[in-house]
Length: 253
Image (cartoon, rainbow, N blue to C red; front, side, top):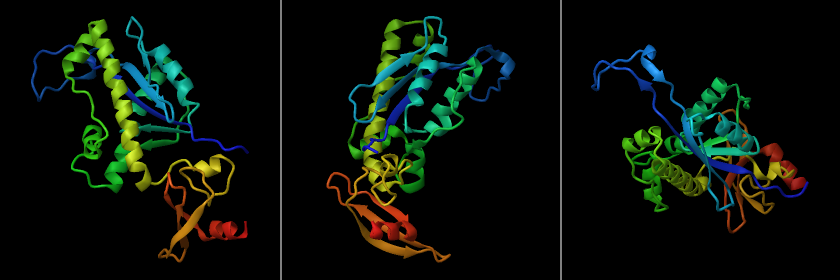
């Protein structure tokens, strides 16, 4: 099989709030779902393929209906080997799935994902796990500052506000990719690049390279031998782990 790059898709969504009837306002107001006048929806979805410079955008239609936008994004998402989002598993994908269910749009029950928020929480000790903070920490950009008034203007069909919303969402995608690249050498891959290209598991999971060397061996409490490998590609250097059987297969190759 010819070498095949991982089709990695970075994405982000912006959503509208519920519109509700309320007798009063305040921080401790409890509203029943019967108070909802108009259900929340997805305003826009922005996405970018790894290795490409263009950040694409989709938005709801003139009637603030998100159906066609979601249909188009699902077509895009289904082409990806991996979806990358910040809080993408718990927020973005659940939102998309909920709205797809509302419209009856077919969607895979699960996708191979990499959630940078989960990776930040699970393997690092940042002062904050917010995307904006991590980007600033690494010096790779920052989110565009905005306020709730932008969402209100979009709901009032302000065309300029929608342009600003798309710009805001696109920047999130750019920052997301930059943060991913900083975290990537220190996290476990969810898609094995080498295996995707039809190669053995002892090839590099990040770049698919064949030039890998043993860095360390370790034994688990149950006696299973794990072999720590490192890619020798100068532009990669990824550390990864294989089992003894895979290592033996590499020696025999």
